[in-house]
Image (cartoon, rainbow, N blue to C red; front, side, top):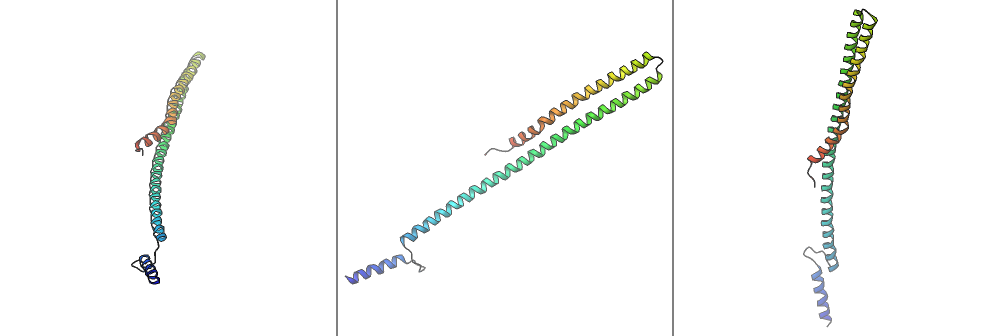
Length: 159
């Protein structure tokens, strides 16, 4: 009986020893398979994280492009407004020059009042004309940046 007990112990030792000489037990096998599962899960999490980072980078690039387009829209509007003010100043100078020449030719006080009334009307009309242009440009300035951002976002496929 002692011999059969010893044979069983030797058989158990042989089954626990692998081909490379390391001793393994059923608990160690479970730990190895658990470590493999943990490793696979870590890889999946890393893949998900990498995909999330890629999507975030794409979104950032899209937002940057939208902001660049938005900035261009604001700059374009500012340029339109500056041009409108320059046209207004040019018209006022032209009207003033014409009025000065007309005042030199005036023969009576009534002629002088007519020249000044015409100068006032012309300058007021120039102001109103350019105010409309400035208002339209300011309105576009207020909406273009949002349109540029919206259009940039619409160009990107949804995930």
